[in-house]
Length: 572
Ligand SMILES: [Zn+2]
Ligand SMILES: [Zn+2]
Image (tube, rainbow, N blue to C red):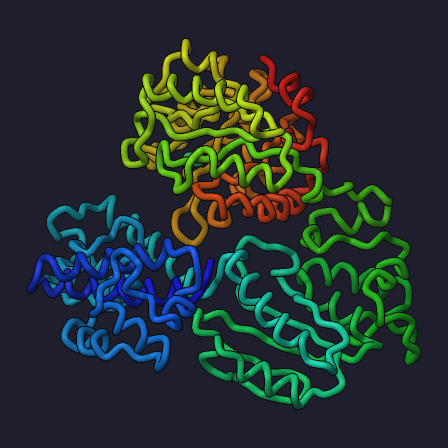
């Protein structure tokens, strides 16, 4: 979440990969990979650590790496990386971002076909030369082509969570200026879209010269694309583009409405204005020459005889009609959440101990909290076998009895749905858990029919309560697997299974449209963080954003209910 840490980790990672590909030394690259991991999982800002001269105190960072990091923080330069890039001219981070492409494949493609970037890879994939390489059949070439598409999107789009971090930094820097009266993030970030193309910030201020000077001079700015008195644009080191607009107070509400979008929502709103003999634009709502509204966004909506529309709904999916009829849903708010039903500890692949996770849940004033580590078939995540799961169940019983925490700790597991739709833990043991989440973590390339049957079969197991991350997608990385969700919803309804809205910023699975369909199909939703560390418990916020985009109310969501009601509702 700390963007400088991510940058530094990426520099070390790239050096390691290029050394790997060069292949002169087997051990030197490992030091860089280890260093990259150390920085990525560092709990504080690497710039602070460097300032205290304590980089070498981080396990995995030796003197050599510390020097590279310090130099990069101070000058933005990495001479070693520049040299390597001349010797091995491969855009390795770009290529490795494609799922299923590792250092060995990159090296093979470079040695045999001279592939150095997405363009040359795409050419080789299309002209048939790529599929001739050992280990790369037609199937993997097809996947690589899909992967190229996703990576290209990734270069153009940013995860909402990352965009909001950048936005927050810029907004707080500008808000500190004395002449700033109002400042708001607009655009798709305000609508809480899952990914953001560029960021729009609107400001109402008197001293525009200072505002623009501060904006283009921010530390995270890589390039100034335009600088004017009412609009400036920059590109950040993270590649995100930011547009800053100065808007006078009397038009601020209209500007906010206009620049929040979406395009479809605004087109419909403008046509409503027209029918009423009015004109709506970024400066205000006008009757002839006379400005009727402009200062307040809410007042603009009210002028049309409708209620204000929450930004998350502004996609022209029926929200305008609902606002006219006064039937907009009473959207879920973060304070309604009473617990988290899907979290991991160091028992499987989480970073924190069970006590640390529960302490953190207590800080968030949860009423209940479910620990749901992976089970045995997920070996890469150190999944629990029956023996460890049984020990875990007993441990949670003891923790509940200890009276150390006010909340109820729920016994859970995230069990794997196997190839045949069976689960990897016996019913006997599942029956002792409070909450069983079943998830797909393997064979994601199964055909739609096979995947649908697999999942439906799993949901018929009478101990399954929740279907975890139902489509398996990773935003900007991996498309959803093919599955007939309406069939899944039907089986889930018959068996009283809850659909998960996985709140991890890279998953946000189910998506907004599917959430609405699930609720229409009579299902309940669990908004879960799937946290693998204490910090990730905060991802609940992104789940709530997504829930709002899916028109969900408090009642649609299972973990807004009291413990007693929750346990009653999940009963089979
Ligand atoms: Zn999972
Ligand atoms: Zn999980």
